Length: 485
Image 1 (cartoon, rainbow, N blue to C red):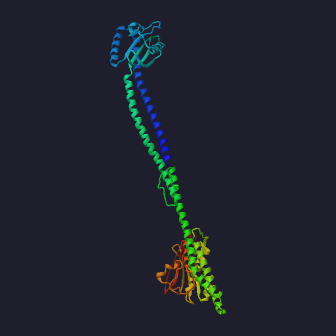
Image 2: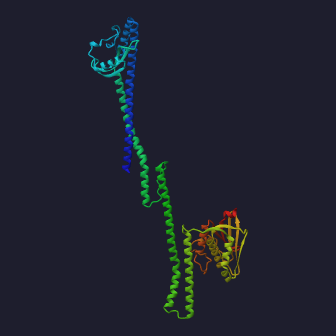
Image 3: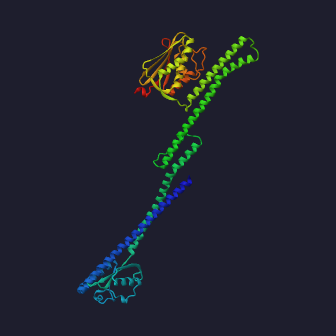
């Protein structure tokens, strides 16, 4: 990640530095052009004004008054350190009179550039140049402007010469300030590049660290990055992945725990009946039991123990399936009354053995819930089998179905053994058997299966028991919207 940081840092720095230097050079060039241009404009306007005044004086023969003008111009030039030359055009048919000239260039050894701008002025063009002048011993700006008569002929030229020292000093001073500004800009560019590079790379480093932690198996790690850009979206995706991995891990642990519980329960509950069956079988195999009556009794006991084991394994398999998060119910709209009546018919034979009677009563014949028919029928079968097991002979088992506040409430009531109040919650635990269980057969899983069925349907189950009302199991299901409408 350090390589990415330094790459981004260098890229940002180079871009910002180049931009800063280009801006500095552009402003320096612009300022130099403005300073020199303004001075050229000043000398050019002065030359044009002198040329116009000279042309008018020569046209009107105002030699005396022009002489006064030239003295005033000379005083102005001395104050401004500017020389003004008025020269005649020797190539003109009627050149400017010597009364209006201030310099005879024929007696001077002029530089080639000065001759060039004079020739341009004689041809009617305004020209200028700046260079180190051997006469003035400094850099000077020279501007030549043509003097025209009323006919438009160029009769002479005005040459204004001014020093560039002040302008050059101004330019140098400006360049110093600009150099300082550029250095400060470069330093700021480096700092900004460092800051933005770090801001860009830091989330990437955090995402990388989170990915390594997730790869190590610690799925609850979050990036903690909140940004409204592509990196923020990537971090959000990583956080979603973390949550999904946590859910997957919890799901896996649940499945693994269910598997361990299943094998633990099977091994625990089957140990005793297997030992009993093995003991009877060994006794018969070794010939210790020769009496045919005893042999039949042993075989009957082995048969009973095998039936109990079969019932236990069936309950464990059902419970394991119900506790599996992947288990799906086959949901449909059911009339609870019809399901209860079907379950009641299924245990008529068991009820007849104890001379019991059973009734299904209801307040509203349209008591609908959304559920799995087989599972809800299994729920009623478990509750009714428990009622038959603990009811006194010749008593009645009553199933009552009512509608209350958007719920379908089913009550399964029997008259017989009472469940102590302190055990009302415990009877829904695995392998728990109430203190009034006695020698009655059972695996201790029936009510656990019943509770899982009810909870899978979004309902609740609880019990109440007393000597006056008997034992009642209450099951509450949410009423389906079809029934409400």
